Image 1 (tube, one colour):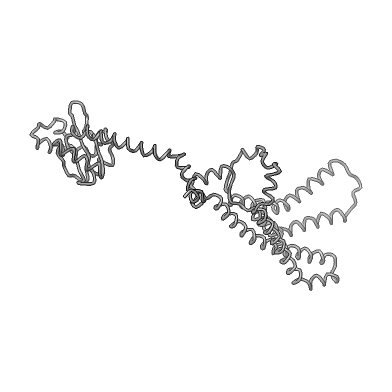
Image 2 (cartoon, rainbow, N blue to C red):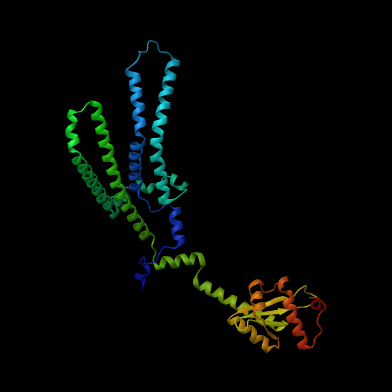
Length: 361
């Protein structure tokens, strides 16, 4: 039995998940972020790289051709530097912004927004040699090494197949001009990188789902851990049971003291019971002195019969009073007329004089 209690067979509770998040624990894959950044960077170069090449070609043409600089001063160099930086910024920044934005979105998609100032403090356990050796030879390290070797094999295979399929273009480079060679090589590099990026994204998705599964397994709780958490939030079960017993005794005492003094008990007819009392000299409105459902309702009816308190069946009024009014509080204005009618009926049965306030209601 003790062995079963220590087995992590229970789903993690919301508190366990919240505590893990506060400690910075979340299912994440660094490979997924890196692969998507690589892929988005290659796509950005394919879509926006032509503008960068045109800017660089125009700059080289300007610097290597045209008139020579016969005089150079500080103002000329400053203007030249500002022009170069502006042209590079308008072409390079959009290309850089794409992978940066993708990296942020990917990380937020995996773990969301996490504010962990405690992570800025040094953790000396990370520099513990024994702990370091333990991490190096752990099952997680073996899995990372195996997966890393598999990624290298996949990248090499994708690159080899791509280059083999373009072998005719590569062999034809000898007969091309320098500009054509550069164009072919650039196209070959970008498309090879694109295919490698797609392969890495697929592998990274597999790694991410594995990390999520592993994270869920680590969060699972044993029966004993669930019990300890319940004790932490709800207290000891024995104490809670004792508290519930005391509350039940207090409720029974209230019924025994209040129901015999009530003027009428309104029922539903068996599920609910509400005891009402009205004193025109001390009360502005009738007061609910006791109410109950199920066993308590049966107890209220029993006490009413024992002490000669009239019982009146009125389902809508009983439901309204039970739902809207707590014990010890007056009835609401919208139900005052119905309560006054019931009390007037009870007073007539007892041969008592109806209070003036009840007559006006």
